[in-house]
Amino acid sequence: MAKKRLYIKTYGCQMNVYDSARMADVLAPMGYESAAGPEDADLVILNTCHIREKAAEKVYSEVGRLRHLKDEKARQGGRMLLAVGGCVAQAQGEEMMRRAPAIDLVFGPQTYHELPDLLGRATRDLMATGRSRVVAIDLATDEKFDRLPEEAAPQGASAFLTIQEGCDKFCSFCVVPYTRGAEFSRPVAAVLAEARRMVAAGAAEITLLGQNVNAYHGADGDGGTLGLGGLMRRLAGIGGLERIRYTTSHPRDVDDDLIDAHRDVPQIMPFLHLPVQSGSDRILKAMNRRHTADRYREIVASLRTARPDLALSSDFIVGYPGETDADFEATMALVREVRFAMAYSFKYSPRPGTPAADLEDQVPEAVKSARLAALQDELNRQQEEFNRSCVGRTLPVLLERGGRHARQLVGRSPYMQAVSVDMGSNEADLRGSICDVEIEAVLSNSLRGRLIGRETMVAAQ
Ligand code: 5AD
Ligand code: SF4
Image 1 (cartoon, rainbow, N blue to C red):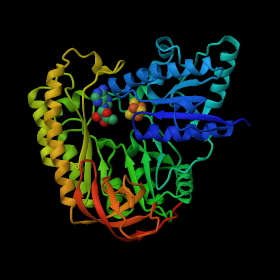
Image 2 (image 1 turned 90 degrees about the horizontal axis):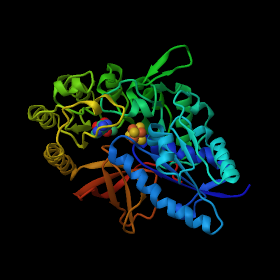
Image 3 (image 1 turned 30 degrees about the vertical axis):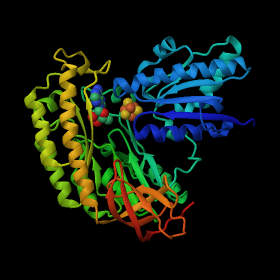
Image 4 (image 1 turned 60 degrees about the vertical axis):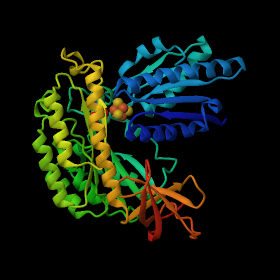
């Protein structure tokens, strides 16, 4: 089989990172190997994100750049196929083709197991007519996971595993229910089998992914279902799996069993991304979040009782339609009270087709900017404070890759902080292992530490 080169550019969330890896798995039997950049590629896939306007617009700029590359290749008698997948593809479908005719194939997140077929059609159309306009955006398929091949390429010491996809919650600002479709959980056995393969291929840490990961309720093979807490208890039985994380959770789906799992299962890392979006009950109601700010406080308190060293991360939206100064102040009050080790915050971005986009009382851009700056100021202060509190402590760090300097490795602490570790005179390649590291300093985007000793050795590759 002729070798072909594939370049995938991934935007957005970790699920897109996972999806891109699976697209490469699907295409490997067709002879596709990974290319270093789009210049070397016979097929370029943009795996896109539609969550905010800026994320979506980036795709069109990239298509513009790639069009020149494509034209240049054609002049030299070659060919480059350009495919756009992911959430912008799902949301815009045919419209993408009209706006950017250089695109040969548009395919949504629930169709990528069909890529070999879709590419075949695109190639035939190109040869027959000089033009391909293949669009596949069927959301209703629930057969993707059954039809994907086993993962071909190992993801390394820290791997992503999608266990749940889609969303039935319909927060009024969010495109996800429209781009990823209805909520769906993979069966327990399929998740366990994939996790075992990942560990055998060198993963010490697995991050379970889902747009609503704690809504997980996978078939247990006995006619019942298992929730996320139960699933993680089962995963913890896999020898060599040292760390379990999960993202992204919804406060509504934090149940007692999940909280207890944080207490009982040492492999579950003491770090949780639990988006709250706003601290104002009025805005939470308007957002259709279906929980109050106090309920969020209660959940955090229970989690911290279960796992006292738990650190939290969150997502915030400022400037949701109708948000007043008092609403924003309620968000600030919640932040000051809960305290976050890190957080993401965004200006509300109207997304076509979502209920909030059509509301009249949109907040002026300047107000959004001022609120975002104030919130980020506070969140940055809290992050810095958390990072500084780690100095002098010895933390287990999963070493993943080489650092910027010789004799330096980079990994993650239990709290997801990037830690660069000076290996000193240690000659062993400790990539893939969890080591005790004394944290010495806080740098701008990471921590710096000194190797104290090796905690666990897992199959280093
Ligand atoms: N505008 C701004 N931020 C948004 N998010 C989702 N939709 C929007 C939107 N329309 C944010 C939420 C979510 C995160 C992934 O992105 O905070 O948790
Ligand atoms: Fe972006 Fe949401 Fe799609 Fe992830 S699921 S790529 S965050 S729009």
